[in-house]
Length: 297
Image (cartoon, rainbow, N blue to C red; front, side, top):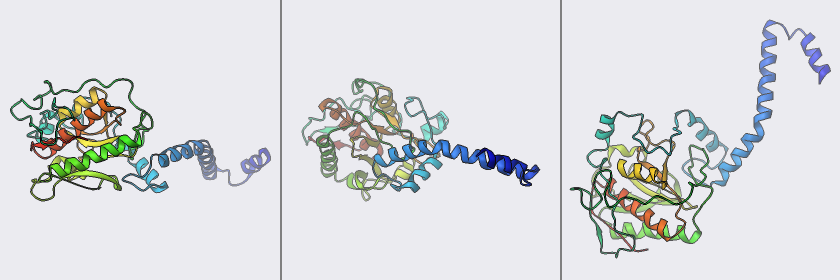
């Protein structure tokens, strides 16, 4: 190697312009060799998360990396979207953005129990507080890799039985509230994930703040985490109390709502109940305050 470098330095290539090319080449080669193990490990982690909304291959890995410059890192901040002024934010999410739709009713409510909307300040705890607030989640937050997509947790995951229970809840919720909701393949995560949507006909127009989520309100991932769009108030509370974190593209260039959050996988019945409340609250918010019947699952 030393003799090769000596010949290179003594050759005509290593003049004013050639020297720069050689130095750049050697620097790039060294950097690539050093970074390759890290890239390979990161790619293996990416694949281990399973399929999502972007290709489950090296192309998808590169695509999500290209989004990194515009992605946000304050995923666990409970404050208002710093990319929008308060006035713009209030206008975009009006009239229900600053209302809470969380109810004190538990997920054990019978099928014919209707969750009252928060309009008027009674049923949902109204505003930024009230009796319908969430408890603080116990323990640390789960580990979530820093990929822009897919967003998944790799610790504290749900059991297969819990995931099946969650999927059953979504199906039952759409069936009982068929005038407002419908179920189908996720547009954000792909056909291998089931999602609840604002019904295409009869449920009103899609709110402008939904961005590329369009009519999709909630979907569940294979490890038990889920994405749901809730009101600004409910999103802030869920993040602040340890139940959720935002997506790297939440509130970024209006691609996804600022209140589009990943709710952590339920580990027990109590956490499952909180999850059902957040799902129902999201359905109420996106539907414009319509009544949503809770189901038992």
